Length: 309
Image (cartoon, rainbow, N blue to C red; front, side, top):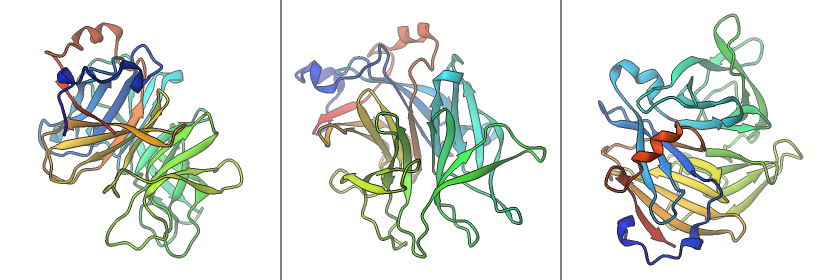
Protein backbone atom coordinates (compact mmCIF):
# COMPACT_ATOMS: atom_id res chain seq x y z
CA UNK A 1 0.00 0.00 0.00
CA UNK A 2 1.06 3.60 -0.44
CA UNK A 3 3.08 5.16 2.35
CA UNK A 4 3.83 8.75 3.21
CA UNK A 5 7.33 9.63 2.13
CA UNK A 6 8.03 10.51 5.76
CA UNK A 7 7.67 6.84 6.68
CA UNK A 8 9.52 5.45 3.65
CA UNK A 9 13.07 5.95 4.89
CA UNK A 10 13.76 2.21 4.84
CA UNK A 11 14.14 2.41 1.05
CA UNK A 12 17.75 2.55 -0.09
CA UNK A 13 18.73 6.01 -1.27
CA UNK A 14 20.55 4.66 -4.31
CA UNK A 15 17.52 2.84 -5.64
CA UNK A 16 15.95 5.91 -7.27
CA UNK A 17 18.89 7.71 -8.85
CA UNK A 18 18.28 11.10 -10.42
CA UNK A 19 20.94 13.20 -12.11
CA UNK A 20 20.04 16.80 -11.34
CA UNK A 21 20.68 18.85 -8.22
CA UNK A 22 17.01 19.71 -8.36
CA UNK A 23 15.31 17.00 -10.35
CA UNK A 24 12.12 18.63 -11.44
CA UNK A 25 9.17 16.81 -12.88
CA UNK A 26 6.22 18.96 -13.89
CA UNK A 27 2.77 17.37 -14.10
CA UNK A 28 -0.41 19.12 -15.22
CA UNK A 29 -4.05 18.26 -15.88
CA UNK A 30 -7.12 19.52 -17.73
CA UNK A 31 -9.10 20.03 -14.54
CA UNK A 32 -11.80 22.70 -14.89
CA UNK A 33 -12.71 22.82 -11.21
CA UNK A 34 -12.58 26.43 -10.04
CA UNK A 35 -9.33 27.29 -8.23
CA UNK A 36 -8.06 23.74 -8.59
CA UNK A 37 -4.32 23.39 -9.16
CA UNK A 38 -3.66 22.72 -12.85
CA UNK A 39 0.06 22.01 -12.61
CA UNK A 40 2.51 20.76 -10.01
CA UNK A 41 6.27 21.07 -9.83
CA UNK A 42 7.73 17.97 -8.17
CA UNK A 43 11.18 18.02 -6.59
CA UNK A 44 12.76 14.57 -6.78
CA UNK A 45 16.28 15.62 -5.77
CA UNK A 46 15.85 13.68 -2.53
CA UNK A 47 14.60 10.28 -3.66
CA UNK A 48 13.19 9.55 -0.22
CA UNK A 49 11.29 12.81 0.11
CA UNK A 50 9.68 13.89 -3.17
CA UNK A 51 7.56 16.98 -2.64
CA UNK A 52 5.01 18.53 -4.96
CA UNK A 53 4.45 22.26 -5.16
CA UNK A 54 1.56 24.00 -7.00
CA UNK A 55 2.61 25.91 -10.11
CA UNK A 56 -0.67 27.48 -11.19
CA UNK A 57 -4.41 27.01 -10.74
CA UNK A 58 -7.48 27.02 -12.96
CA UNK A 59 -10.08 29.76 -13.02
CA UNK A 60 -12.67 30.65 -15.63
CA UNK A 61 -10.69 33.81 -16.38
CA UNK A 62 -7.47 31.94 -17.26
CA UNK A 63 -9.01 28.78 -18.73
CA UNK A 64 -7.23 29.11 -22.09
CA UNK A 65 -3.78 28.93 -20.53
CA UNK A 66 -4.35 26.91 -17.37
CA UNK A 67 -5.45 23.51 -18.69
CA UNK A 68 -2.74 21.03 -19.61
CA UNK A 69 -3.13 18.35 -22.27
CA UNK A 70 0.59 18.20 -22.97
CA UNK A 71 3.85 19.79 -21.80
CA UNK A 72 7.34 20.36 -23.15
CA UNK A 73 10.27 22.04 -21.41
CA UNK A 74 12.81 23.99 -23.48
CA UNK A 75 15.56 24.89 -20.97
CA UNK A 76 17.90 26.16 -23.70
CA UNK A 77 15.45 28.95 -24.48
CA UNK A 78 13.93 29.25 -21.02
CA UNK A 79 10.39 28.28 -21.99
CA UNK A 80 7.81 25.83 -20.71
CA UNK A 81 5.24 24.99 -23.38
CA UNK A 82 1.84 23.52 -22.66
CA UNK A 83 -1.34 23.16 -24.61
CA UNK A 84 -5.03 23.26 -23.95
CA UNK A 85 -6.43 21.25 -26.88
CA UNK A 86 -5.51 23.33 -29.99
CA UNK A 87 -4.11 26.30 -28.05
CA UNK A 88 -0.33 26.44 -27.60
CA UNK A 89 0.69 28.21 -24.41
CA UNK A 90 4.03 29.26 -22.93
CA UNK A 91 5.42 30.22 -19.53
CA UNK A 92 8.95 31.61 -19.05
CA UNK A 93 11.55 29.92 -16.89
CA UNK A 94 12.12 31.83 -13.68
CA UNK A 95 8.49 32.95 -13.36
CA UNK A 96 7.06 32.72 -9.88
CA UNK A 97 4.45 30.28 -8.64
CA UNK A 98 0.96 31.24 -9.75
CA UNK A 99 2.02 32.55 -13.16
CA UNK A 100 -0.28 30.94 -15.75
CA UNK A 101 0.98 30.20 -19.29
CA UNK A 102 -0.16 32.68 -21.92
CA UNK A 103 -1.57 31.64 -25.27
CA UNK A 104 0.67 31.97 -28.32
CA UNK A 105 -1.91 30.96 -30.95
CA UNK A 106 -3.96 28.03 -32.19
CA UNK A 107 -2.39 24.96 -33.81
CA UNK A 108 -3.57 23.80 -37.23
CA UNK A 109 -3.03 21.15 -39.88
CA UNK A 110 -3.18 22.20 -43.51
CA UNK A 111 -2.83 20.54 -46.92
CA UNK A 112 -2.87 23.83 -48.80
CA UNK A 113 -6.59 23.63 -49.42
CA UNK A 114 -8.10 22.67 -46.09
CA UNK A 115 -6.91 24.12 -42.78
CA UNK A 116 -8.18 22.60 -39.58
CA UNK A 117 -7.63 23.51 -35.92
CA UNK A 118 -5.97 20.55 -34.23
CA UNK A 119 -5.89 19.52 -30.60
CA UNK A 120 -2.67 17.85 -29.48
CA UNK A 121 -2.44 15.13 -26.85
CA UNK A 122 1.18 15.76 -25.85
CA UNK A 123 4.19 17.94 -26.66
CA UNK A 124 7.96 17.48 -26.60
CA UNK A 125 11.21 19.09 -27.70
CA UNK A 126 13.37 17.17 -30.20
CA UNK A 127 16.50 18.58 -31.84
CA UNK A 128 15.58 22.06 -30.54
CA UNK A 129 12.16 21.97 -32.22
CA UNK A 130 8.68 21.55 -30.75
CA UNK A 131 6.70 18.46 -31.72
CA UNK A 132 3.40 16.98 -30.68
CA UNK A 133 1.23 13.92 -31.03
CA UNK A 134 -2.36 14.26 -32.17
CA UNK A 135 -5.10 11.68 -32.41
CA UNK A 136 -7.55 14.49 -33.22
CA UNK A 137 -10.30 13.18 -35.48
CA UNK A 138 -10.30 14.30 -39.09
CA UNK A 139 -11.47 12.91 -42.41
CA UNK A 140 -8.65 14.85 -44.12
CA UNK A 141 -5.66 14.51 -41.79
CA UNK A 142 -4.11 11.52 -40.04
CA UNK A 143 -2.99 11.05 -36.47
CA UNK A 144 0.73 11.27 -35.92
CA UNK A 145 3.73 13.33 -34.85
CA UNK A 146 3.78 16.89 -36.15
CA UNK A 147 6.35 19.66 -35.89
CA UNK A 148 4.81 22.74 -34.30
CA UNK A 149 6.10 26.25 -35.01
CA UNK A 150 6.21 28.57 -32.01
CA UNK A 151 5.75 31.81 -33.98
CA UNK A 152 2.34 32.37 -35.64
CA UNK A 153 1.92 33.23 -39.31
CA UNK A 154 0.23 36.38 -40.59
CA UNK A 155 -3.17 34.80 -39.89
CA UNK A 156 -2.18 34.15 -36.27
CA UNK A 157 -2.04 30.42 -36.90
CA UNK A 158 0.57 27.81 -36.03
CA UNK A 159 0.57 25.58 -39.11
CA UNK A 160 2.04 22.21 -38.13
CA UNK A 161 4.00 19.89 -40.41
CA UNK A 162 3.66 16.11 -40.40
CA UNK A 163 6.79 14.19 -39.43
CA UNK A 164 5.44 10.66 -38.87
CA UNK A 165 1.90 9.44 -39.55
CA UNK A 166 -0.20 6.45 -38.59
CA UNK A 167 -1.00 5.64 -42.19
CA UNK A 168 -3.35 2.69 -41.67
CA UNK A 169 -7.02 2.88 -42.56
CA UNK A 170 -7.79 1.53 -39.08
CA UNK A 171 -6.00 3.44 -36.30
CA UNK A 172 -3.02 1.52 -34.98
CA UNK A 173 -1.20 3.96 -32.77
CA UNK A 174 -2.47 6.41 -30.20
CA UNK A 175 0.55 7.81 -28.37
CA UNK A 176 -1.20 10.12 -25.90
CA UNK A 177 2.11 10.39 -24.03
CA UNK A 178 5.00 11.50 -26.26
CA UNK A 179 8.59 12.46 -25.48
CA UNK A 180 11.98 12.42 -27.20
CA UNK A 181 14.90 10.39 -25.87
CA UNK A 182 18.13 12.10 -27.01
CA UNK A 183 20.16 9.05 -26.00
CA UNK A 184 18.51 6.98 -28.72
CA UNK A 185 17.46 9.75 -31.09
CA UNK A 186 13.93 8.36 -31.09
CA UNK A 187 10.54 9.46 -29.88
CA UNK A 188 8.99 7.50 -27.05
CA UNK A 189 5.24 7.00 -27.06
CA UNK A 190 2.78 5.60 -24.57
CA UNK A 191 0.06 3.71 -26.39
CA UNK A 192 -3.36 4.66 -25.03
CA UNK A 193 -6.38 2.40 -25.36
CA UNK A 194 -9.85 3.91 -25.75
CA UNK A 195 -12.44 1.20 -25.03
CA UNK A 196 -14.81 2.44 -27.73
CA UNK A 197 -12.11 2.60 -30.44
CA UNK A 198 -10.57 -0.44 -32.09
CA UNK A 199 -6.79 -0.19 -32.36
CA UNK A 200 -4.34 -2.74 -33.71
CA UNK A 201 -1.61 -2.19 -31.14
CA UNK A 202 -1.59 -3.13 -27.45
CA UNK A 203 -1.02 -0.67 -24.64
CA UNK A 204 2.66 -0.19 -23.82
CA UNK A 205 5.77 1.94 -24.22
CA UNK A 206 7.05 2.20 -27.80
CA UNK A 207 9.98 3.85 -29.59
CA UNK A 208 9.31 5.63 -32.87
CA UNK A 209 12.21 6.20 -35.27
CA UNK A 210 10.55 9.21 -36.84
CA UNK A 211 13.84 10.76 -38.00
CA UNK A 212 15.04 7.45 -39.42
CA UNK A 213 13.24 4.56 -41.04
CA UNK A 214 9.90 5.24 -39.34
CA UNK A 215 9.88 1.92 -37.50
CA UNK A 216 8.03 1.41 -34.23
CA UNK A 217 9.33 -0.96 -31.55
CA UNK A 218 7.61 -2.02 -28.37
CA UNK A 219 9.85 -1.52 -25.33
CA UNK A 220 7.65 -2.63 -22.45
CA UNK A 221 4.14 -3.29 -21.22
CA UNK A 222 2.39 -0.71 -19.08
CA UNK A 223 2.04 -1.39 -15.36
CA UNK A 224 -0.50 -4.11 -14.59
CA UNK A 225 -4.07 -2.95 -15.08
CA UNK A 226 -3.13 0.29 -16.83
CA UNK A 227 -4.18 1.08 -20.39
CA UNK A 228 -4.73 4.84 -20.27
CA UNK A 229 -1.51 6.45 -19.12
CA UNK A 230 -1.34 9.69 -21.08
CA UNK A 231 1.52 11.82 -19.76
CA UNK A 232 5.21 11.18 -20.37
CA UNK A 233 8.46 12.87 -19.36
CA UNK A 234 12.07 11.72 -19.72
CA UNK A 235 14.79 12.72 -17.26
CA UNK A 236 17.06 11.50 -14.51
CA UNK A 237 17.50 8.13 -16.19
CA UNK A 238 13.78 7.40 -16.06
CA UNK A 239 10.63 7.60 -18.15
CA UNK A 240 7.85 9.15 -16.05
CA UNK A 241 4.33 8.04 -16.98
CA UNK A 242 1.29 9.81 -15.53
CA UNK A 243 -2.46 9.38 -15.28
CA UNK A 244 -5.32 11.06 -13.46
CA UNK A 245 -7.00 8.02 -11.93
CA UNK A 246 -10.58 8.31 -13.14
CA UNK A 247 -12.90 9.34 -10.35
CA UNK A 248 -10.21 8.75 -7.71
CA UNK A 249 -8.71 11.94 -6.34
CA UNK A 250 -5.14 11.06 -7.25
CA UNK A 251 -2.61 11.38 -10.05
CA UNK A 252 -0.48 8.26 -10.45
CA UNK A 253 3.15 8.60 -11.51
CA UNK A 254 5.17 5.56 -12.60
CA UNK A 255 8.98 5.58 -12.96
CA UNK A 256 10.28 3.28 -15.70
CA UNK A 257 13.96 2.41 -16.04
CA UNK A 258 14.68 1.93 -19.77
CA UNK A 259 18.00 0.20 -19.06
CA UNK A 260 16.50 -2.64 -17.03
CA UNK A 261 13.06 -2.32 -18.68
CA UNK A 262 11.41 -2.34 -15.27
CA UNK A 263 9.16 -0.06 -13.28
CA UNK A 264 11.13 1.08 -10.24
CA UNK A 265 8.68 3.27 -8.31
CA UNK A 266 5.10 4.46 -8.16
CA UNK A 267 3.92 7.74 -6.68
CA UNK A 268 0.42 8.84 -5.80
CA UNK A 269 -0.19 12.58 -5.85
CA UNK A 270 -3.37 13.65 -4.00
CA UNK A 271 -5.54 15.64 -6.39
CA UNK A 272 -8.91 17.19 -5.56
CA UNK A 273 -10.87 16.32 -8.68
CA UNK A 274 -13.18 13.36 -9.23
CA UNK A 275 -13.47 13.78 -13.00
CA UNK A 276 -11.70 11.97 -15.82
CA UNK A 277 -8.94 14.39 -16.73
CA UNK A 278 -6.03 14.28 -19.14
CA UNK A 279 -2.49 14.74 -17.84
CA UNK A 280 0.73 16.10 -19.29
CA UNK A 281 4.28 15.89 -17.97
CA UNK A 282 7.77 17.17 -18.68
CA UNK A 283 11.23 17.22 -17.08
CA UNK A 284 12.16 20.83 -16.35
CA UNK A 285 15.28 21.42 -14.22
CA UNK A 286 15.69 25.09 -13.31
CA UNK A 287 12.08 26.03 -14.02
CA UNK A 288 11.50 27.83 -10.73
CA UNK A 289 13.81 30.46 -9.22
CA UNK A 290 16.39 28.85 -6.94
CA UNK A 291 15.15 30.52 -3.70
CA UNK A 292 11.82 28.72 -4.13
CA UNK A 293 13.51 25.52 -3.04
CA UNK A 294 13.57 26.86 0.51
CA UNK A 295 9.87 26.02 0.61
CA UNK A 296 10.50 22.37 -0.18
CA UNK A 297 10.20 21.24 3.41
CA UNK A 298 8.01 18.23 4.24
CA UNK A 299 5.81 20.36 6.48
CA UNK A 300 5.33 23.03 3.80
CA UNK A 301 4.83 21.03 0.64
CA UNK A 302 2.30 18.53 -0.62
CA UNK A 303 3.58 15.08 0.21
CA UNK A 304 3.36 12.20 -2.23
CA UNK A 305 2.97 8.57 -1.34
CA UNK A 306 5.64 6.33 -2.85
CA UNK A 307 5.60 2.63 -3.51
CA UNK A 308 8.55 0.53 -4.65
CA UNK A 309 7.75 -1.90 -7.45
